[in-house]
Length: 302
Image 1: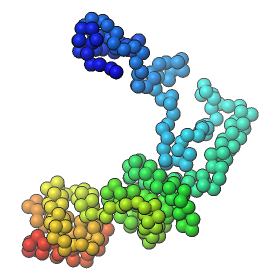
Image 2: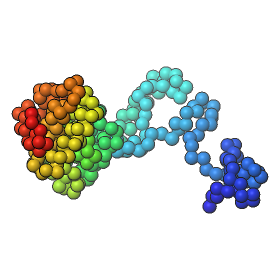
Image 3: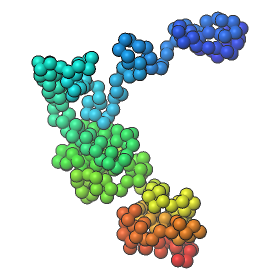
Image 4: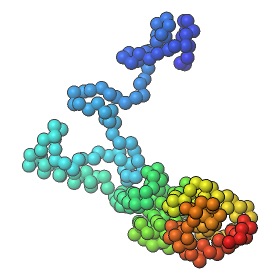
């Protein structure tokens, strides 16, 4: 067991010798521990000029159907020294690439995953979702494939439903309409597939809240932090009253932001119903209806 003090003089100034990897007391010179393991990268130069510590390869990821654990052959016809390959060597390299592609996707499951994970990557990049969200979406899709829930459904629809489920789990403000806009399927199919996956996989998805959409809506409208905090307080009062139960979260968020901009002393934060409607993706009629209800709850006269 490693100690923080010297075994001989009880000194506390222990140093690590970078050459021998020994823990040495700087006061008396006693070696406390020998051959300690260095968890850092390997910066040694082995004659190839590569001292960047990147010899371990890429980490495993769910975003690839084989988790990135198989060998990848570079598409460039270059040798180890950077020179061009001869005609015979180029033909051999092309043959190896072709055989490698076949072995990586040996059955229909692998081909299904390859198509679906590419679709998840495409939608995630277009919606600017973090890599962790895409990775979890891929993991949920693999679970759906293992339980044979993809049969009879489109690959694109299931992939989009997995992304929507992950966004709901982690409170990322993305609506079905947004995902349907970037997906090759419609909103109805994504919603139907999402409900089926949540039921069969027994995933507990928390209900979406207007508080998840308010910060994003205020950011897109370039509103001040004070107006955003006021909109969140309005939403809290609406939740406490219980009068907004059953209403869509995006409509409540849009109305709360509209009411907050009306109550703000800063005239630069004033926004019209049309501006908020375009940013939130809801109709002006919905904003007006929710706005009237919020005014009654907050006892504020428009």
